[in-house]
Amino acid sequence: MGRRAKNEVAERDARSQTDVVKTLSVSEGRKRLGHWLKKAVQGEDIAFAFEGKVVALRPVEIYSEDYALREYGVTRGQLDQFVRKAKAELALDRKQRRLKPFTGRLGSASRKAAVFSGTRAS
Image (cartoon, rainbow, N blue to C red; front, side, top):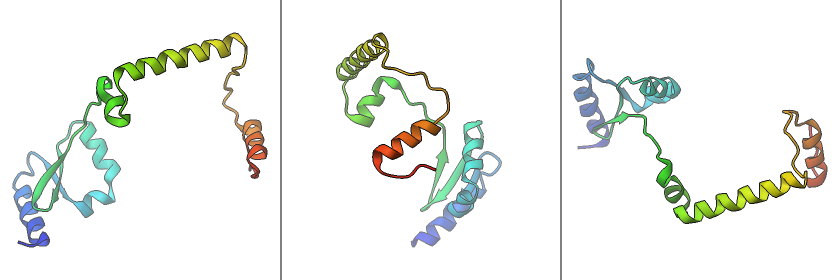
């Protein structure tokens, strides 16, 4: 069975579930993806018919316990060591008054950065 035929079968099967799940083709979903993502986050059942299967959109919790390991390959011990070092460096910088509060204005900072990098700031 070709890809198009599989998609048609999946869409037909999905249409029989429309009272439970809002099922879209990929092209339908692409047009208003932000809208459908928002609906899924709000708890509505949204799905796509894709290659003969129905694929649901669901919010997923990211657990901080293993996030650093999964995303960056950093162990809990390495992460704790980094946090301790970063806090110590910040404390030293505060003590030596090397930190400046962020005022929300980037004008002078971006001009200085542009001069430093050899580009022009707007």
